[in-house]
Image 1: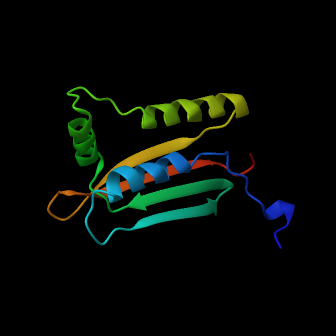
Image 2: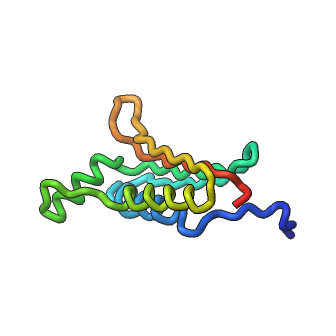
Length: 124
């Protein structure tokens, strides 16, 4: 059993868009040895969420999306919408939410996946 004092509330739909992006855009287009890792950790009164995949990377996924849609100037709106949503949560709850998206590279400098890191107070 978890005491109420031990519960950490996560605003709804915070991780879902990032996990969905990893699956649909990064891992779906990678032929084998796919992984997706989601880590929730509490440190210094903050909740840290890290979502890591070893997909094809954001640039390659964007290129595939542009080719499929036949658009030269396609703009991905998912990340922009999530950044707007986080900004609204910051204002509504008077908190600070840190979002970092890192393109991972292998030893040869080629795309090796994406890491999304979110950090916000655990007392929401």
